[in-house]
Image (cartoon, rainbow, N blue to C red; front, side):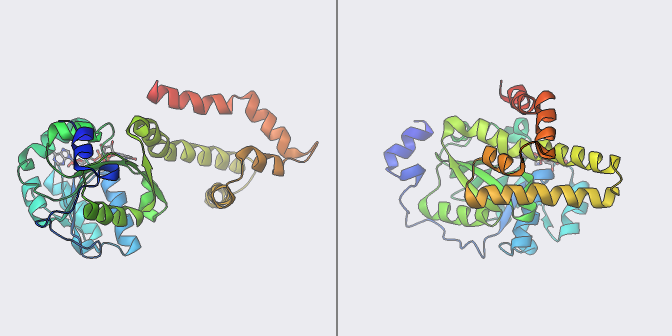
Length: 287
Ligand SMILES: NC(=O)c1ccc[n+]([C@@H]2O[C@H](COP(=O)([O-])OP(=O)(O)OC[C@H]3O[C@@H](n4cnc5c(N)ncnc54)[C@H](OP(=O)(O)O)[C@@H]3O)[C@@H](O)[C@H]2O)c1
């Protein structure tokens, strides 16, 4: 029975299963969160949990490939290192799988029979609900794609709408993820592209920030001033779009007066192929 069938058989919307009497009830403000893999993404999520006040550092556990490196990274944040996945699972109420996609089977093999009814949040690209059902049948898991702005609680966490969490587990997981920014449910068929857009775009936007700052420096703005000047402009423009839902084209038009300076810059960007460059970047990943 695959994940979809199992969920349909259990009759829940979005994979919600009925709450069994035996289910362990954990509140999000007391949950112990364990990361299997503590690299860039896990660190960003841990920083976000701590900054939001949702999960104290002392309730965050982590294991990784190299224990000595982990100790330094974890202890700098007040997070508790664990030697291996078994002791990590024993210490945690919620498990976050944050290893590279090809490492997932190897990292989870030692704990496959020890996960019990603990909710598993995967952040590994390409690891869909259906794939987890093959690897860890009968477990409670949800596949997500966060992005690095979760570290400052401004992330977006794309969640596959098909999952095997119970209603209570989903509530707990959602409450944790919402502390990191916006949570967006996405149909399984769109998980890959949604994760690519939200997960990879911080790199592209950082390149835009760096490029505009280079231009500012070229015309005499000190480097230290160039980055906040550009970053606040990018953040403010994004906030304005989110607040009003205005079409980005209309936002561009509002800055371009007839015969003015901005439209000259817009024309130069069009000539340089800005739009097709971004579309090609996504084609390079998804195509
Ligand atoms: N980076 C992003 O912006 C982003 C965005 C969305 C999703 N993701 C997803 O997040 C996942 C991690 O990416 P990342 O960028 O954080 O990678 P990363 O920085 O390379 O971190 C990977 C972590 O996994 C650990 N690890 C390796 N083998 C392990 C094992 N057998 N058991 C337990 N831990 C093990 C590594 O430990 P050692 O370093 O000690 O070997 C390291 O702590 C990926 O699946 C990726 O698709 C990343």
